Image 1 (tube, rainbow, N blue to C red):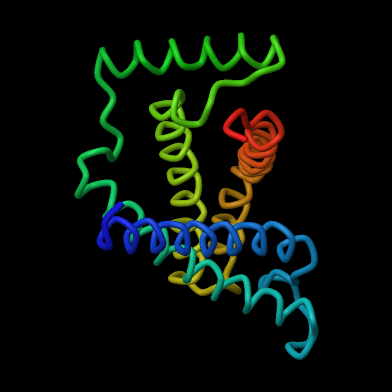
Image 2 (cartoon, rainbow, N blue to C red):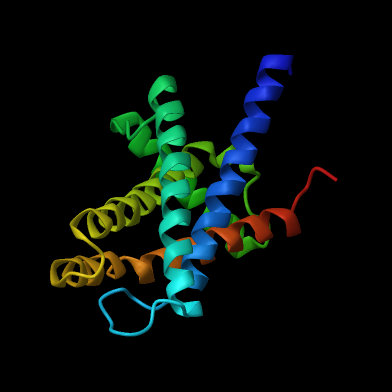
Length: 180
């Protein structure tokens, strides 16, 4: 690996960690924050969490834009054609068969599947960034923001599934890593 690839890999790992941290913070913080359309005093921990939620969403949006730009430059942003579909299905089958047999595929053997799942995660994150930006843009304490907020929260179960699946697969890969 040359110096440019090392720098690019490090940047990608840092960006992934930043985006993952923001997403996890958003998931946890949203459970205790006070939504701005609910009446109450401004100087409360719930209001502070909402402000931090807005800022974390902004940071996640910047990280998301960077990742999307990198994928666009590589030509891998949501490019699915017949051969890619066949490879995705084959890798899904191999992953399921390997999991059932107690030895999941190595990460390199499921690269197309990993990229596809990454794109789904980016789309889900984009959902939250865009609907969150819409709440901010219309004024967070308005009735319209409340309606958009319900739409914003609609994707939350999918986010829990995505993060849980992501962590679960990472743990399985570490547990069954055959390179050691």
